Length: 109
Image 1: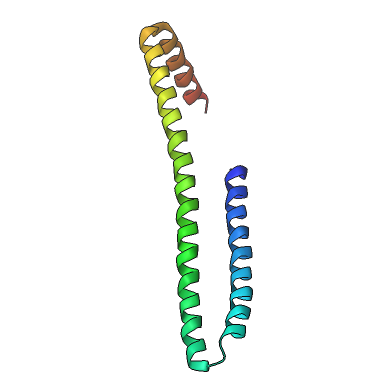
Image 2: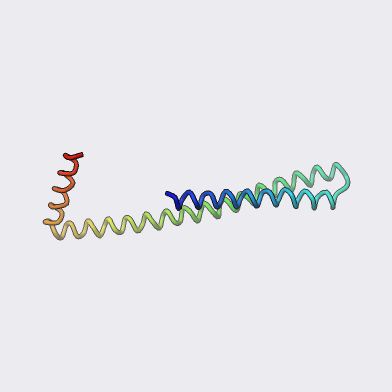
């Protein structure tokens, strides 16, 4: 869980830095380039939509990567479960011993 929290914090911190730099530098660039207030308003709106578009693409990339990791982990888990099931069916004594242990543990706790 710590690893997941650390990754989430890294993404959030990266977003914070990206957003702050975008706002600071894009505002400065627009103010240097545009003097007319009507045009300035339109350019600021375009800049805002560009920010939303860029951050949406970045969010998609990060979320897709995270879901791919979760899916790989799930596939490994399912493969392990199938393998365990295979061996338990092939060796009934082990399956019986495990069931007895689980049953005893359930009675104790």
